[in-house]
Amino acid sequence: MSDFLTLSNANELVRIAADSLVYVASEGNYSDIRTRDGEKRTVTVQLGIIEELIHRQFKSNENECVRIGKSLIVNLRFVHLINPTKKQIILSDNHTFKFSLEASKEALRQLKDYFEKHSEQ
Image 1 (cartoon, rainbow, N blue to C red):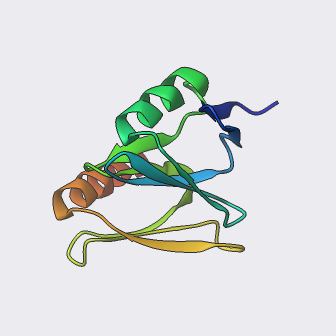
Image 2: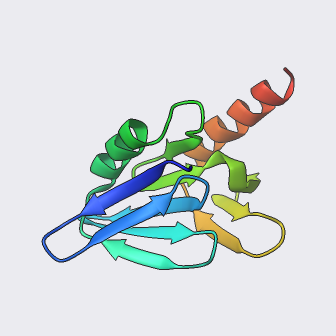
C-alpha cells in the first residue's frame, strides 16, 4: 500500500498517494498540489508545513520529494528537464502529463548538480 500525504481542515480531508504527487507550488498561505492525473487541489496550508508532512508521512526510502527554492516542492521521479538559464523545470511521466514550471536559477543549478552527481553512481 502506498504512503499518503494527508491534509485536513474543518471542511475536508485530502489524501494523495506518494507515487501520485508531482509537485506542490505555493503563494503565501495557499498551496497548489498537482497529481499525475492532472488534478489540481488548492489547500490553505503553507509550503513549509506540507514539506514537514511529506517527510513525516512518506516513508523515507520512497520519499523523492524535495523543496526547490521558496515556493516549490517537486517529486524527483518526474523531473524531465532542468534549464537554469531559462529558469525552467519540466515535470513529466513521458506519457500522460507535462508541467512546465519556473524556479530560481540557483535552485535549478543545485538540482541539476544533484542529478549529475547521482547519475555517475
